[in-house]
Picture (cartoon, rainbow, N blue to C red):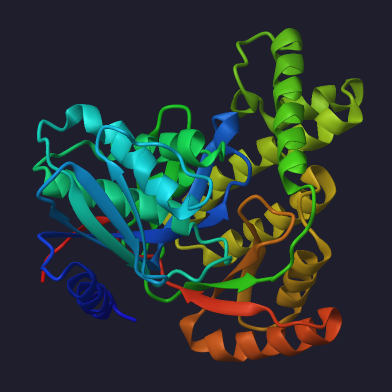
Length: 390
């Protein structure tokens, strides 16, 4: 579905539900993480992309203080007073928008609420961050209906805060940044210490496949927390032994890691090797793109996944199978897990002409190995979030 078709579909749903037209429309894409795994909370670097799938959020002012929010796929509604925004565990999807509105409320002078409806083309469960797309599309639409503008990075942090406080997910801000700062044909390079963003061109000769494992593994939250704590302990170790300030693993080089790895606890040594290596791979990947060396970029993706297996241990048999198959299939230039790991999706770098052949070559062996299908989506680096016009 194109963005024009998405807008029309969402408009029809809005008109049908509310019996009136919307006044403002916003669009925000999902994202894919391409290099830089678990580096965001270590104040490091990530290369990501806004994708060619997203959420359209339509809004109009209401006649009273009530805010009415409708999920267009379910055609279900939640409503709340604009000054009584309370988290509701029964309708978690509504909490993403409630959190965003609560953070924007101090900037709103009006005493009128709004009617809003959103609809998505992002496949659920594919690890493409529909949650951030919802937060950012809602933020832009709410700003539009109240005649406000807020800096993009502020909106990204509002989305993150909404997820922390109203959903209970202690996410980084990579997803929201990617959705806001995406650029067609480019990757987004984020520096999570300075919160500065730049873009690196990929061109139109390459795209990504996101291959969903459809695998669910237990203890993911605990595993995530363990990795984060191990990284913090490793950073504290380096802060104590190196002769320069170390605030996070971003401040440690691989040479320094090699000098000290045998004196560290094994777990902290492994976890820190992954993060330090990932930061170096992001910087090398951005340089490779600048030089037009897409082969080396793909090599770095494979190296990233290998580190996820041996150092960070956040992969799983399904992801490893996909990446192992990818190494053997002509036309795939690179592959790695994307996102937190422990399941979810792998991202593959391919030529657009090879998409169908690659998808077919992966799907059959995967089903034979695991007894269920994987999902394959073509991902094109795309423009970031924006207000829409008819």
